[in-house]
Image (cartoon, rainbow, N blue to C red):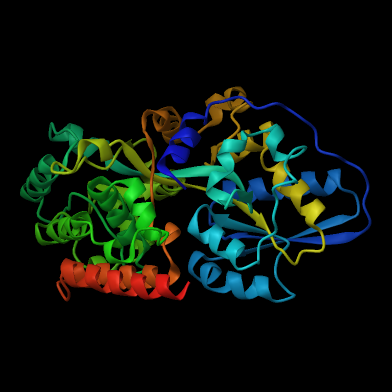
Length: 432
């Protein structure tokens, strides 16, 4: 997804959409299989129950079989399931490379001609970019997520500190926090399951390399001899290694899961946590409600200024299996997720940032305060910074994830990791 498209998407978050009712014509008894990521959030699960009940009421004779999976097993098993005869009709996916890869492999249905009387009544055609390949649409975005630094407001107020706006101040803050309490870190990182580390590196790389150049490399569009050779890739890895070496993180980064690191934050072991918009309700349930605020990741002091006005985030949505025997029905289900009331309820109960904000104002007092901050803040950025484990070829993702652990632990150098990434990217591109 070009940086310009992500910028347009963010700028359009508050745009109103044309209201329309879905067709309620009876259909023959049939089952629609929908796959989604699992969630421990009561609000998320309640929202899905309501959406499914509404769809079944509007489509008499249809039963929705709703199945959920954890993120890692979902990523690994989705393509296999779609190639079989037992896969879903409708399935969640991340915009960009994750959705593009299943489309290129013929596993996702071409939806280009199905949107006119469905989702295009509720969102602009330009928002379909993250799920498009060669001008054809293979999925529909339904919401956005963004990653912020959540920080402990009581700690900063008690000690008369301001959350750092750039990395020079960040490294000073890492030292200051340790001087106040040696057992407290500036921020937390749970990288045992690897995806939090690659979020950090994605944000750092975006500031050094720039979103457009990153995407050209990640999609293997750059010339072979130039793939992943920008010095900014090494600088990003050097910076996260420096954060580890200067005590910015809690101890045992690579032995700590993402969930465990969140608990370290909410129990006072760190003053901040780089986490997605889904984290607010989790922090509340862990006893920190009203005790935190959000800030963008500090701008890298020696990175190009033009690259500093991006926020780490992405668009998520749903695709339809190329093998589905119920494509029209599946398209109706996806369209329901973009209707004004469903979008508003998904914001209120599931903290999903809407693409259709028509009914959001009706529930302003019910939206989580942090999510209100995010919705107000997102239009200030030029676009989303690409996330490496979403936009990158799967083989390269695995190398990057393991490599970041090794860089943090000092087992490999940033230069060696990027040389490995470059060599593997050249091989992959040559085989395409």
